[in-house]
Image 1 (tube, rainbow, N blue to C red):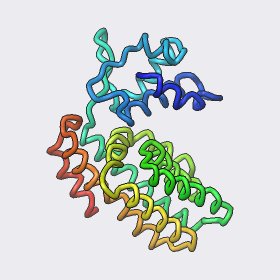
Image 2: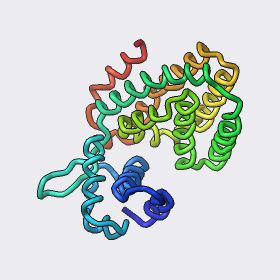
Image 3: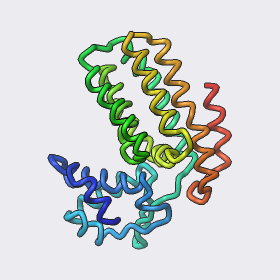
Image 4: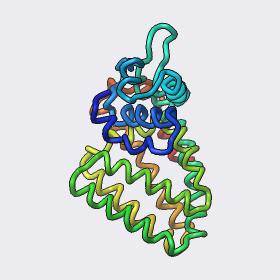
Length: 245
């Protein structure tokens, strides 16, 4: 893991247990491909870079292994997994199932007190799109959806989604170079915000289904860009079937 990965996330360590911080740092490096599929994760070097002992490092790696992001081989090292299509589909199924319920609650329970936070996120996303800043755009994308869970009254739902979508996040993050994708995500967020603001539950649900349904095109884009980082391509047929559920 290079120094940029550490420096970009140093502030995340404030007030967090070391194992949680290490998990966040390494997960971010995997999602952003700073740690590429198949790459060996040297535990000793990473401990030294992050300034932590082996115990929190092992806790972080076990959590990442549970999410399918790394493979820990006893006495053989730790390796970054390829993107597994089955895990992408599972993550999408969990995310869409939970968010389709929470977005209705967000529209039902919307309070103008949330407008400032939503306006700021939309502004940040517009600026990221202008700069073609992939890392910021992806970060704000997640923050937008996390905020919708909070507006719905169930902020912890986002953590459940986060824990299940590591492989899905890798695909989503890789899609931002796709032509028009910055603007596509931004426009869909703006439309969602407008529906939620006027308490239109049905329109919010329709827009979110359309928004999340774009994963099919995202997967196709990533496959065409670099098929070698994905395993289980035959499972894509199941992803297509989910769009009708």
